[in-house]
Image (tube, rainbow, N blue to C red; front, side, top):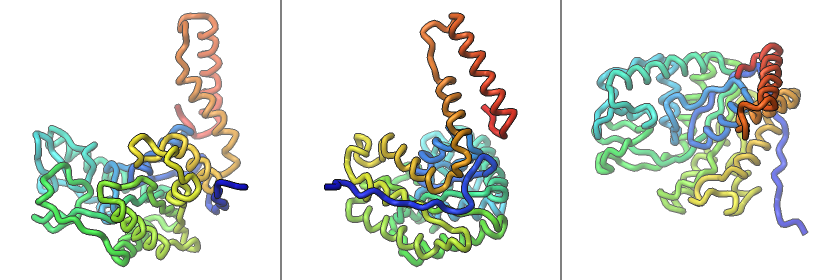
Length: 314
């Protein structure tokens, strides 16, 4: 008797190799995939405005990047001795106002460049719940611990999510017609909203995504959410918080992503990169020993060889 249902996925066209340029935007799960891509030295750029959870915030970033919005004093505010922007994650916040503005404008320029040059963009949606800042009647990407009474919490209806995803897809395709857009739904459970509310939120996102994807127009869906809920489907695949996928789950989903999206011709290079990365992470018992010095010499030869024969750099 089989006590598990394994997901069966097929390879997509326009696969990722070491000539590809990748942009990842969205929830914290996009960071997990980025870390894997970065480890194997793919050309990847992730979350320039930090983690963003709802589709409106992601659409706003893409719109502002394409239009090369210039952030100024009116776009930021001070709270608890730090300067913040509602469009960005607190990772970009700063105690210095000018530093925050410089960071925001630098990342807008970088995102514009990535959107025009990327071969693939991976957009991970996290939640349909959003917060509207009452004072300006705008949806924020991050509340920055501003008192909750200053916001209205709303659930985005499916038709508005569809409109947002169609709009950001059109914007991207206008500046980069050949790009492959891969939507994913984060398997992270937003239980602070409530069990029922989290399910409702995810269902809205899932329904909207499937109204938008169109392989003929290079709009795809990768089932991170379904792999976690229907293939793994056990609490042993979660961290101790029972909310975030653990390392085992992330590795398994990455394996599935590799199968679907990574060109198998890259396997030998990935194996070599992995070997080098393990070598770089190695902590010797005696760093001054002749054996370790020879190990470092051999490792450097491997790094030189791979950098000379590919566009990979360490």
